Image (cartoon, rainbow, N blue to C red; front, side):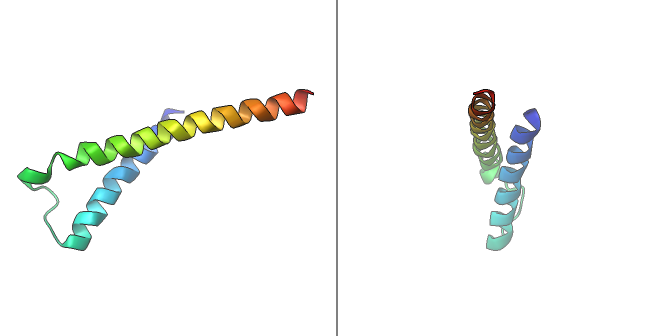
Length: 67
């Protein structure tokens, strides 16, 4: 299940790179390096939340199949 968190963290980093590309700003600027962990953290937390949603849905589906 860690793969979802890693995927969404990578997606957050890709969004940051895309944002800087659209703005035509350098990718590794000293003043904006703090944003990479923020974007990765937001993406990772979304992946963590999504993993919990999937577990809850699987639990509900297995209970429905059992009854």
